[in-house]
Structure formats: structure tokens, C-alpha cells
Length: 391
Image (tube, rainbow, N blue to C red):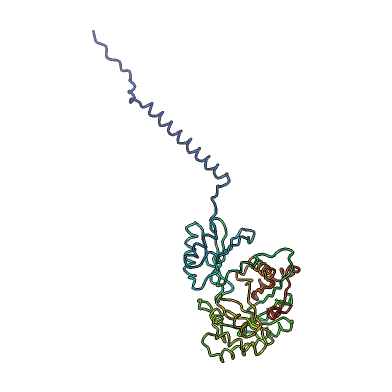
């Protein structure tokens, strides 16, 4: 008998132990990861849709005060104004720099502090230079716009109001627009301003004499905007014929006489720049010699808190006064309007005030719009009326 051959049926290979269980585990992990990813996406979408929990914004005043104090500026010389410009909130922080203040180092310190708070501050131009306007920074810190002004000026008196009191008539305000003389167009540009607004004409500009004649024909009060030596600040100097420290008194008198011959009809004199010259008693006495002989008044533009010009003028019996507010240190409509409000408030609280601006088209445009609104709040007067105490 022939033995039967073994069956040739194919046998399925035996699977590896646990293979089925491993596949199931991997599938479960994959599903879990997908679910986790979907949950994370849903959470992030929910977070994005809710109002963000913003932390407390940095105190702009505290930031600037801390930086300024490192260079000898006490906290009381830093003022803060919360306002708005172009429809957006704006914090205006003004540093009234003391003598010897290290402005450049302060700016670097403040820029670094803003950067550390994930903000930024960048230099911007200033209108009034030559000792008064030292620096301007603009930017954003903590989501709020910030403007920092560094001025070579004393802080406003504690009793001086910051804003006008509605319905509080009284007080006299004199306005002077500086730097005329470069173009005769200014004669037409100021024609619609109230007659009490005075103009100060530079004697060393291209069209000075012609501009002075044109303004005089409007019966507008003229001042000689006498160039005087500033403290060196890497900017333009005061120009030819300026009053300079160290000149003989006879030479200073001659320069003032020549300037008055150009700006014929001037009723008074104020300084153009002069942060160095107005702090020098000898130079100021020589200037006042000419004013006393001609019966002119002197307006101290106060381009430095160290000025002795007003004091010397009073000692010499010359009618005098000082500038309270610069209108267009920042040449932007909102800034000019706020400065005008400050001038009106000063006039209301002090009884009188002097505001100085410049013959820039924007300044003239803002004044033309805003001055008619001041009726009843303050009385516009010529500068000579304040200097001479006239009512």
C-alpha cells in the first residue's frame, strides 16, 4: 500500500504576537492627537474672539519722570496732559529742563525705556529752537500715543489754570507772531486777524523793510524781533547783526539802532533766540540803553529760564513783560489750539498773559478760526497796552 502524501493545503502564516493590539493603540493615539489639535484650534479661536485682557497701561508720566530724574530733573518739573489728537488719545508729557540738563542722554534713556516696554519713541522737529525747544519725541507706549517735549523753561506757576474757565470773562491777552520778514505774503496772510495781534519782524531777513511797511499800513503793532546769541545747540545761529555776549556796549547799541532803522515804526522789541545773550546783564543793559532813549517797550521771549532781560528792563525803567505761552512749539492744529487755551486760561487766572507764535500759515489759520470764539472769555489787547499797564 502506497502511503498517502501529506496534504498540500497552504497554511496562513502565523501573525506576530500582539500585532493587532499595536495597530489599535496607534489608531487611538492618532485620534487623540487629532482631537487635541481640534481642541487647541477651538481654544485659540475662543481666545481671539474674547475681549483681550489688557494689563494696566504704563504710566506715561512715571516713565518720563523716572528717566528725567536720572539726569537731575525733579518730578515737579514734569507735567502730564491727557488729551486727544486726530481722534486718538494722546498723552503730552512736558519736561521743564533745569539748567545743565543732559538732554541727549535723557533722550537715549527714554528711547531705551520705551523699547523695553515694547513701545517706541522717535525724535520729531520743534518749531521754537534756540534754547527754549530742546527736544520732541513721538511714539507709542503701552498702546497709548505719547508726545514728550523737553523745554528750557520753568514750569507754569501753581496758580495758573491749565484750561479756560467757561463763562469766566476777564483777563487780557496779547498775541505776537514772530519771524516775519522773509516774504511779503505774510502781510496778506495776517490781514484778517484781529488788529490787536502784533507781528515781530526780523531785521536781517530778505524783505524785512517791505514787510514792516506793509504791516504798518494795516495799523498793526510792530515789534523788532532782535536777533540775539543762543546757546550752541547744533542749530542755526541768530544771523547777521545779532546781539552777542562779549561785544562792546557801543557795538551792541549800534546793532540795535541799525535793526530799528530796518523795522521802521516798531513800538517795541523782543528777542529772536537769545538764550545766551538774554542771560548776560551787560549785553541786556546795552540793549535797554537804546530802548530807553527811543521810548520803546521790551518783551522777553523767555527762551531760557536764566534770562535777566525783563529784570534789567525794569531796573532801567523800561516798560516790559514776558512771554507766558508759545503757541506753536509743535506745529500741528490740535497742539496750537491747546496752547491757545492755555494762554486764555493764564489770562483769566493772572489777569493778563502774552502768547507768542510764528507767522506760519498753519498758526495763522488756527488763530483766524479760534480767536473769534474767545469773545467774552478774554480781551485781546496790543502788547504795548500790557507793557505800559494801560487798560
